[in-house]
Length: 590
Image (cartoon, rainbow, N blue to C red; front, side, top):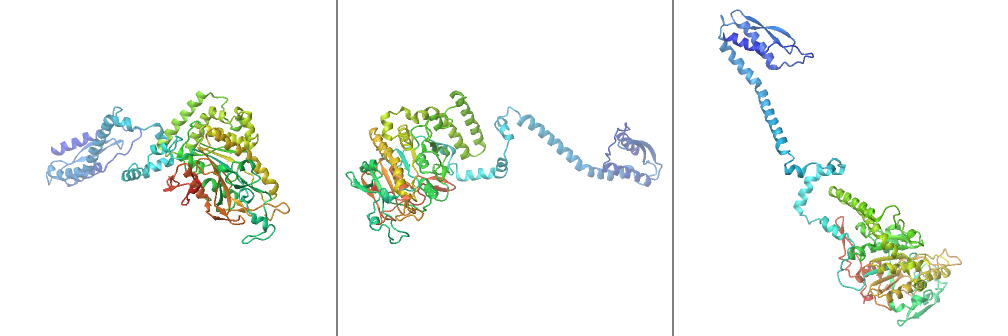
């Protein structure tokens, strides 16, 4: 009876069904073991086996499965089936465990979808994927995947203020006026750069010994001495000797400080020019104007704080002379070609002929918003920031700059005082910029590279700057701007006291890094004094020598800065204009 019931259950379990169109094998190991064991039961029984048709839908046909009878069996059926049942249970145990596991997993997934991932969950609202998350760059992906947790751990260890915050960086990278380290008179700088290296022995440093040894060899020098073709005359109450090529500046010598003991490192125009402007002969460094703007900011937020005026062409070194390098781009100088007459041509695209100011403002605001979105994912890029700041400044300059560079608003008397020349226009523009709060103005007055024909060419170059610079000083005094404006005139190096071998019958002078002259005026500078001296031939500075770094340190001191403390951290190091050198020439400061 028991065997028949078992057979009935087996037959019912494998109930005949219609075969599928494309049968797939679903025979498990358990099914095969059941069939084999049940067949073996027939052979071991002593009675007659009954047969019932059993349909296997997986196979698509029926078969006869013998069922052991209860008669004449050596062992009762119940006794023979319990090991088989245990064996089958043991085999199916992993399957049952997987089924339970899958059931629990399904329940967990449904619970997560219905509960945790609900849109009403505040964590989902705060951490849901945003549009920008679908546009990851390779750098972002690698940073998030490989360095994200490491960066968080490092930031937690060092603290938020260890590397400096973005708020602090943005506060520093602005043109807002700032106070220097100590109070001083100078608030503005006008640097007249006599690029090309003027001859010191023909302008500000007379050497009677050259007249005595003219045409003869001189000690410690190759070549023969060349006497200056120009006469020197004592000027003013101070009695400072000035060359006849500077008659108008000579009349103002009591307002000037003449540093005759300047020297530099390399007598090559491009290297020395960049060195004078940046304090570096090799690596790209911020220009002195950028350092001044970084330290003081500017008084006029609608004008660039640092403007470089050049009468056409590009000087040796190009934009390296007014670049901001690793300083924020907002401190970079703006170069203006003053050789062009009209304001619209002087500053290209100063006016937008197609878009009104209101629409331009909206466009700039959109650009700033997009940049802010970009900066949330990546660190701010210096070049991108500089470009955006240039856009913003260009927008503001549309009204302010057109007035500052329009010389037609000056009276004829003032125009005649400065002279209607390129240098006269540049110096007049410089005065108008100073009046409008521009912090640093550089005026390029080059053409002093006289390897030959110095007797004819040097007076022409001196005449170009003599009247404009003298008028500039007088004009500043009348407007009470002289004491607050530091004026600098000089080149990148000097000239040798001997004839240049390439001069032939019209001689000139070759480069000399060991001696040259720089002029300072206004802005807290002592007037009517000479500082330092060269040897009897003017070949090298020998008394109170002043290096380029010393000059830079003195300029910063006149603006109220300790040059060792005006620093900017970059690549793990605190950089400064004077590098690791520089001594303030205190004797020239009031």
